Amino acid sequence: MEKIKVLFICHGNICRSPMAEFILKDMVQAQGLASQFEIASAATSTEEIWNGIGNPVYPPAREELARHSISCEGKRAVQLKKSDYDKYDYLIGMDTMNIRNIEKITGHRGGKIKMLLEYTGSTASVIDPWYSRKFDDTYRDIVTGCKAFLEYLQKQGKIEES
Image (cartoon, one colour):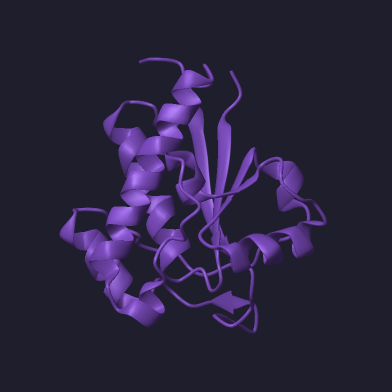
């Protein structure tokens, strides 16, 4: 079975999308499903990328992950590329502005592009902690979304039970 390729996307790739990347990696590892996935994250902007080198995960986001024993060691911001649409099975944005920018960059609409909380049946955005400063709320939103995403994959028969 081919790996399920998931790309989480936010504006800068230093808060929400890397948090989602490492939360989902942690979840699939804990469930013995890690070998079935390829999980990454990217930015729609270049604001956190300088001379081709991305900034590391924003310290408060890194600290929130660490509070839950999740490491994001070595992660640096990268920008979404047009070719990522073909590479990944799921392009998951955090808010409606991300979705518009993902569509603009990839040249595709809908299909494999969704907001994370859509998997919970909600049209809500994942709270942006850059502005709210509530990294714990963002963490909870992402955990809720990732659990719902895994349930969706199970219902679709895409995950092989370990």
